Amino acid sequence: MLPAHRKMSEADVQQMMNMRKVGITTQHIYGSFACDMGGFEKLCFRKKDMYNEIDKQRRKKGIDAKSALAYLQQLKSSDGRMYWRHTTDDEGYVLGTLFGIVTTSRVEGLHSLLGKFVNTHNNFSEFIEHHHRCLSQMRFKEVEADFDSIHGQQELQTELRALERSASKLYTKEVVLQSASRVNVTGERRSGFGFIYTVTKYRRPSKEWHVFFWPSTTKMRCSCQRMESIGIPCDHLVAVIVYLHMEDIPESLVLKRWTMCAKDSLDSGQCTGFDPLILCRFDALHMSAK
Image 1 (cartoon, helix red, strand yellow):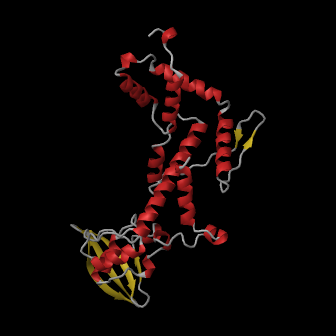
Image 2 (tube, helix red, strand yellow; image 1 turned 180 degrees about the horizontal axis):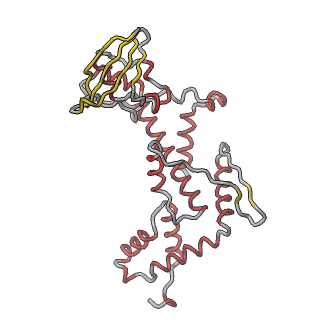
Image 3 (tube, one colour; image 1 turned 45 degrees about the vertical axis):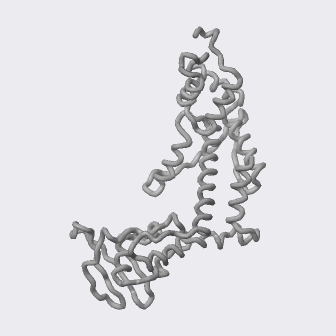
C-alpha cells in the first residue's frame, strides 16, 4: 500500500461520484468497495485516496458558486416554470443572502427530512443538488399520496363508522381524525346562543379544555386553538362531536387545504387551463424517464 501503488481507476471514481450524488457517505462507499472486493485488504486504495479524489473532482468544476449556478441554469432549461435570480462580483462569487427557516415545532419534520440529504461536508453546489433531490422526492410522494386518496378507498378502523366515513370522503389519507378515547366530556352549560362543553383528559381531571358550540351555525371552537393553528380538528373537538352523536363533520371544521379538492382551485390551473395534478404527474414521469 505504498503511495506510488495506490490509485483509483476511472470506473471506481465514476461509481464513487454517482453514489455521492444520491447521498451515500464516503465511509459507506469505501465499505461497499471492500464488500465487492472481498475485504479491505484487497482494495488498491485507502479512504484517504477517496477524499483526495473527491477534492480533485471538486476542483475540476471550478469555483463552487459557478458550479452551483450552472446546475441551476440546467434545471431552468429543463423546467421553464423555474425562477431564480443571483448577483455575482467580478471574481464570480455569489453576492447576497441565503434565507433559511427558523427551527420551530412546525418545521422539525422538514428539517429532519432535509437532514437525510445534506450535511456539513457538502459545499454550495452539492447542497443545491441534494436540496433539489429532496424536493423531487417530496413532490413524487405527494403525487403518490394524491393518487391513493383520489382512486383508493380508506378502510374504516374505528367504531365511529359514520363519522369516519364522512372524514374519508373529505380528507386525504394523510389526514386522519385524532382519537377521542383519551379525553372525555365531563361538563355542559348553556351560554347565550351556544353551549360550552368541558373536556378533561383520561386520569388527569385537573387538565381541562373548553369547546364552544353554536347549534344554529354548527360552528365549533376549542380553547386549545389547534384548529386555528394547524387546521385539523383536535381530540377535544372530536370528543364533543361524538358526544353529540354527529354523523358528519361540521363544515366549520373542514379547511379546503386538507381536503382532496385542495388543488382544484389553484391559480396556475385556472390560468393555463391544465389540471395541476396532471402537470405534477407529468413532471414525475418526465424525471423518471431521464
